[in-house]
Every structure is written in structure tokens, then in C-alpha cells.
Image 1 (tube, one colour):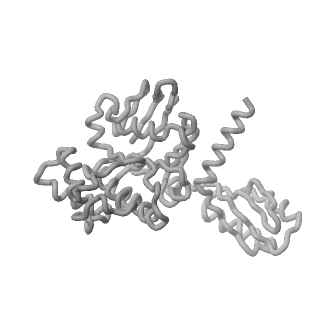
Image 2 (spheres, one colour):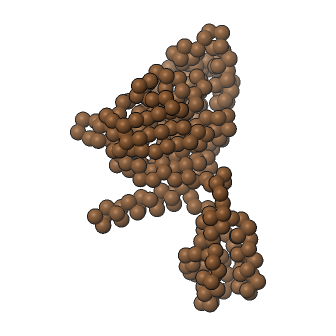
Image 3 (cartoon, one colour):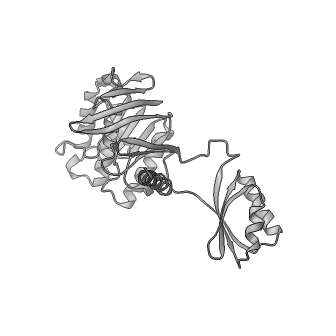
Length: 314
């Protein structure tokens, strides 16, 4: 569990984090999103005990980050946006060096190196110099170094920056594997589409403040009152179809879009089945019934536009 309360961080002449508070559950993958200058990197550095906030508290698994930074370094792995590698060293030598920094006993060193290399699927490159690796493999080596001491928390700042589509897809698979192995991840990124497949939460940061912390994957929650955005495609449209849908109590926010109707169905999958069966029984000419998953980008834009509207109204 990560617990952040009332954190303030200041650079000379600028307050980068303003009363930031949130909690992140163990085993989650959280997307940290926001525009440039929002304070994402500063927040990650505070979580990893590399920077100390002006005020507030941060605890990770009940350990105070500010009071016990060295202990946090053992529990947390961090990969910055612009990270460096020792290009003249082999991949193996890079990993051994990091293992020694973490004071991993000599007897365990080779096993730890192989575990990290296998996790990142770079074992076959162990005897190749880091300076000859592709961008994607350098990124994998950077993450291998960050998890070599088997941290409970992994913090990644723009990990997919500069990667091609195939490498980004491989990175998504990697994050899901690490989560399955018990790791909690926070991933900062500008590219929301790449976060869709693996993030369970979204933390929206703007101008140093937390705008929203929302759950994006709700499979493990009570689904009785879930809202499903549904597009009903029709062979033809007639006005009385709207009245018909509005009289069904599980349907809300009915709007027309050409020969289709958009609405929100409140309930679970059985509710969706019942709604479809009901409208077909009432002879509505349905040719498509599409449950639309709300994308991370849509969620982000909803909050961002709402915030801008709030600023305008002040």
C-alpha cells in the first residue's frame, strides 16, 4: 500500500506539488498521467526517496519514506525518463554492478542476475556490451537493473519513450507479468493508448495537484451498478423508439446519433442481455448492440475538460 498525504514540494520560485494525497493498493498498475510540467517526475522521485518534500507524509507498506530513505531504496525500484547505462560494460557486468550496489551477497549474485535477465528476456544478450543494444533492449536492461533487488514497488517514468510499436507491446506484456509476480507498478506516460491494456488505475495530475484518482478496470468490483455505454444500431429510426427506451428503468442518457441510439445501461452482463432481449421483443429493428468500453484517453479528457470549465467559471 502506498499512502501519500498532503505532500508539498517546492523548487526555487515554484511549487511543484500542492497538497497531494492519494492511496494506491498493492498489486495494482497505476497510470500517472498529466501534461508536461504537471509534477509527475517530481512525485515519482519523492515516492522513491530521491527527493524530500517540503511537507506531508509518504508511507510505503507502513514505512515512512522521509524517515527511512535507505530502507525504501530496498523496497522500491525506479527507472527515470533519461537513464544511463555503462556502454562499455556487458549486460551481465551492468547487472552485477547494480547487484553490488544493493549489497546482494556474492553467493546470491549470479542467481539474482539470471532472474532479472530472464524476467526481462535479455538472458541471451548477457555477454553483449550495453552500448550496442537497440533502444528497446536498453529499456529492458534499465528495467532489469531497477528490479534486480526484487522490489515490491516499481516506478517507471516514460518507459516507452522512443520505442517502436512492437517494443511497446512487449513492454505491456512485461508489466502484466511483473504484476502477476506480485509487483505494484506506477507508470508515467504521455501516450494514454499504450496504458489501456494493463493499467488498473489512473492518477491524473495537473499543475501539481491530483485532479482525480479513478479505477479504470473494474472486473474485481461489484458489478451490480456498473454503467455501460451502449450503441444501438438500427435499420431505421423512429421517434417513439426514444420513448420506449426511456421507459426502461435500467437505461439512462438516451441520445440519437443518425440511425443509432446511444445510452447508458446500469447493471451487469445479465442486465445487458435483458435489455437487448426486451428491445428486440418490442420490435425495434436492431442490427447492432455494441457495449463501448470507455478508453483511458476518454476518461482523462473528461476530467481535463471539466477542470478547464471549472477554471473558466471562477
